[in-house]
Amino acid sequence: MLKDTPMTPENRRNILKNRPATLWQGEPRLGSIYGEEETEAAVAAIRDSQALTQGFSGPQVQAFEEAYAKYTGVKYARTLNAAGPGLDLAMRYLDLQPDDEVIVPAVNYVASPLAVIGAGGKVVWGEIDPKTLQLDPNDVEKRITPRTRAIFPVHMNGMSAPMDDYLELAKRHPHEKHGPLVVIGDAARSCGGDYKGKKIGVHGLMNIFSFHALKNMVTLGQGGMMTTDDERVSDFFYETRHYGFDSTENWGSGNVMTKVQAAVGLVQLAKLDSFIAARRHLAQQRNAMLADLEELATPLEPADCVHSYYLYTCVVRPEWAGEKRNSLMKMMDQQYGVRLVVANPPAYEVHKFLRRQTEGQSLPLSEEMGRRLFCVPIHPAMSDEDNEYIMAALIESVLALR
Ligand SMILES: *Cc1c(COP(=O)(O)O)cnc(C)c1O
Image (cartoon, helix red, strand yellow):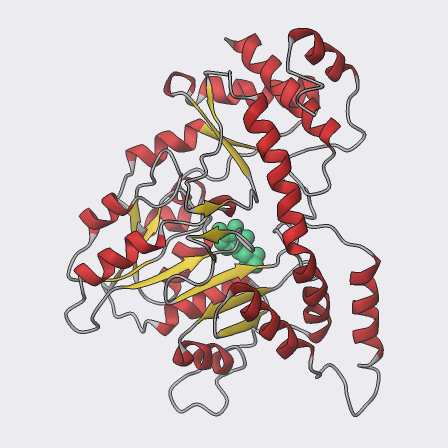
């Protein structure tokens, strides 16, 4: 493609004459691709639920868990109704005492810090590494105290966080009573990415995935999964996702996935690698097309990661922070019909409860990055032509604002 259409001014002009039929406005409302197979799997699961002796119980949930564990390369996978409740259960597993601290990245979705607070812990925000946008291990080390119980990174936008670096810190700074700190990953955006030759979901005590409508794979709009090699963690999730029956220790609520979702999940999982390959193809084309644009840094992919590009995140150079970045977003929307999103500014800037709960903590670097980053729509069904249009628009917008 690139050999045919280098991003010369003339080619850009020609490309921009044909506005894509698909509106690329922020994160597409369906992050995955659904075909007839998903519909057939759902209908079949509903059909066999019609029998009074069968209902909505069936082998699909267990089959999906086994397939996901195998795909990820872990001993156990447990389905959930969504990732959010899984993050809550992950924090509840720690049995946090008042004043116990959990370190989470400031540049984050609100779910993981809320889970910390919900489980009775204190959120300690950590800075992100401005190159990778991941929770910075060097900064984490400075924030570890005798009250620290866990390091709770997010695998940012489809790429693995540096799990081994946190695990090494966790060993070196053990909690007096509980031993090595626990490392838990919020992998909601990162189904299918790799880290050090293994899938995201292997490293750390457990990782929580989302199959929400926007994510890399989707189980009818909602759904989640926890992966672990630890039998106790697996049992804890099994018990607590259904009210804690059979447990003298644990209570829970209703957080189960339905068999219809699991049936669709099996189909989506079999397609996941093809979705990621499509995302990577688009991202690699972009990296080449944007290479000469000095105002932007394209997403970094460290040598030990395979990025799944849930989002394609660019960072403008420091002088373009804030106003200039916002003008770029506005121009892309108004002139070219392409909506960029900021995922994410520091969570305490967008969530008043989180701000109040963490009053006094400010993370200057994360705040700066929140003014510099933006995500360009990407989707496994995006055509090369649409991709070129978006890139031509982005280059034109940057040049116009130069
Ligand atoms: C989407 C998302 C969640 C929540 O996932 P749900 O399945 O919708 O509960 C949590 N964390 C991150 C980083 C997310 O992007």
